[in-house]
Amino acid sequence: MTGKEHARLLVALKQNESALSKLLESSSDAWGYEDPIYRFYHHSFKVFGLQDRTAAIVAALRALMPVRDLHPLFEEVFVQGTGKVFSATMNPDWARHTRPIVEAFFHARFFLEMAVRHASLEEAPNVLPSGWAALLTLYGLR
Image (cartoon, rainbow, N blue to C red; front, side, top):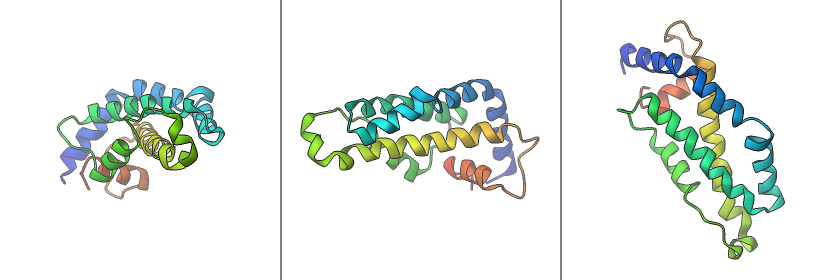
């Protein structure tokens, strides 16, 4: 991929840095991060609420480069971890039903964190830090 596309991603990160930072902050606090993960281990249906946060993060990531598809593996993790509705019949096999929800959140939050972290770059780097390389991979730019 061209350096021009890398530069476009960096411009989009800079333009959206404030909103991305707020989303990361709310996805890192007690209610957006600690409580939902605790709910997974506590076997609480409240872990299902994490799907909305994951979807919000993915929407923000897609909006950065709307003409590019996100990485197929990321999309697979996202699809497998969203669109789930709690049923008491899930309780005996809790992890199988809920771990994809947590996994999708972790992946989405990781890319959000990398977006915020790398928005401060002066220019798209030639020697790639792993986080920047991950973002390029998410957008099919590497």
